Length: 255
Image 1: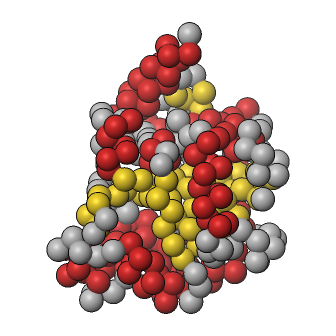
Image 2 (image 1 turned 90 degrees about the horizontal axis):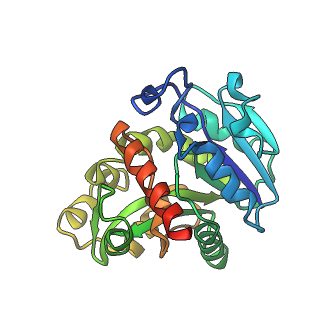
């Protein structure tokens, strides 16, 4: 399977925690750039044959990207970077899309997600993690939680999709990115009739999947991961210290 790592975008508050970084993907956690940690996890996943990283052109010679098979320039918007990463890939073959800010991403988490996405034969699969599983493993890592009928969930950093769904995604991808920290805004993208059920906590995952499938005109679904590391990302400047703490704690347990 092909994998695309999205490491584009401008400098932000996270990248400002160190000097002269192009964006947060190149912030070092435990002495290793975030994007390299993601690439290394994918490289160790036997289902992944080829890794494409989408990043600012000035970073393409960086050692942090050395594990990728191909480097492509990022775009001004997320949809532009995703389009660049998917260009030329078979339209009907599932592609793994990974965020570049997942400091504790594991091979086990990647494999579990891919197996579930393939088993359901989805054109678009989105990883989610339950609040219960997350708090058990990472009680000090904050998240924005969406209340569903089955429980509270947050989004993970892995998506799998078939490139043929990209045209349908173009119109909503920027809205999804803007709304990702607001569950109510995300629910509104599924339709205003969905919002009352979401607000009352009665919206089921299956109902949300059916609406997403109708919007995309392609099978779409949420993959509930048992691996909470999928949802540990570095999204705020304060997350840098949290991530370093997680790496230090993991190192101590293996000593």
